[in-house]
Length: 357
Ligand code: FNR
View 1: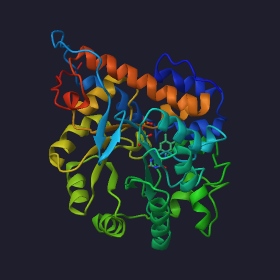
View 2: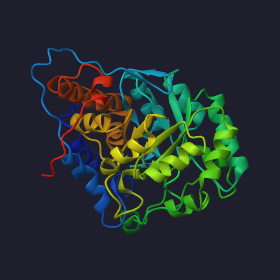
View 3: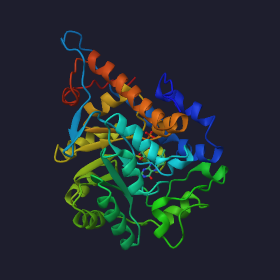
View 4: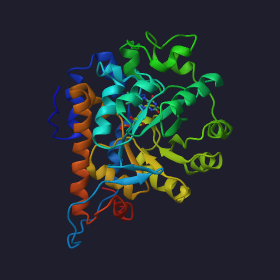
């Protein structure tokens, strides 16, 4: 497998569609209901603009940053996404290698095709987070947290926006069931997830989650707990009050509450409420260097991507993943140069315009 040629990340979906089987592709690409929020995630980036700064006298912008005490070569990270074996035989192992090659941060999903330890090993010491879908079975939650800690993972992402699965029409049309096992689920009596639909998988997860659950997990682990799926200032404050070390602004890539706002449109208000007390991770719809710039300038400390990375994995394994991050990093550097920002800290201090086109 070779590094794939990438014109832009938006074109990858059509290319990946040619090689990922229909059911798996629908599961990856789809949103919920009629995909209104999925589409809004892309459109929202037009709601703010970056003012060119021509006389800033800078060159060679740098992407390196430090978040949660972790030095990173890029502020763009891999979002936790399930079942990467759908896209490539090596699944999360190759994603981990590709992300490590760019010095980025990888988040493993509870529903990974590869075990926590094997994905960590593939990253070869590169920083990784583990994403937890809280189960009703607290022994299971604790055992996953223990395994993550043992594997050297540096943070826990607790996803709270998926107490039920969104209404995913593609999965229904395709009668989609996972054709591959989920390595971390072998401890469930229901089995490893293979041959099940997403609804059945989620049924094992907790159906209600509140601040007390966040606190219970934050108290249990000494790793930083970042709460993912926050779209309101109120929830951000609840999470921080319960001991969250980070807030992850996301609408799950438009896969959960359809009819909700684009994730980018709520970022600034959540960031105002957080007021710098903890770092913010942002995702949902990031495909362009300008999108990443706007997210950083609106309060994000890290910007995550889901689908484009899975498509890169499908098209070129670890090298494909690497190429996706390099491409977005190059686009971001171009925007940084044109906006007169030398460092990621400069980007974060940039004021954007608010003109609704
Ligand atoms: C996801 N996402 C997700 N989130 C999570 O916390 N745990 C998970 O297991 C998954 N699984 C998953 C699978 C697939 C196929 C997708 C596309 C997404 C959501 C993910 O972390 C992220 O929020 C979105 O992917 C971001 O939107 P974009 O970048 O795909 O537009």
